Image 1 (cartoon, one colour):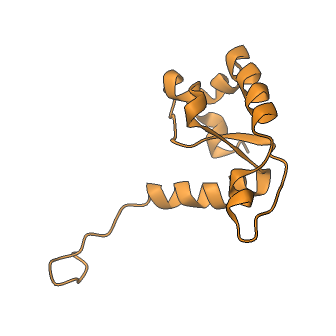
Image 2 (cartoon, rainbow, N blue to C red):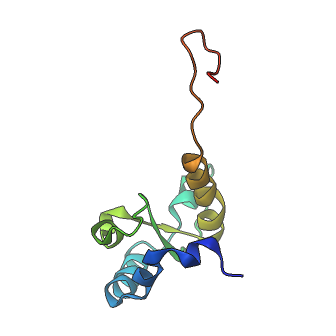
Length: 103
């Protein structure tokens, strides 16, 4: 069974020559996972994934923008970053002025 993200129409962008070349250049310039380095104490883990900071959802300009890239290790990309994005996808609970959830 294919993974959900494999069926997204922009998956082909990851096969583009511009992405492949940019990804390699980025990892050479930024070889360590930014999330590992941000831990206390910092860890210095080689990055293997170029992650899009803001989700591109097929927007080619955002997809290919190096300012929107960060280097991550695979565990952080597939774990913490994925959890952050899943949380952003959930509908937000609205609260009234009294602090109680609205139905």
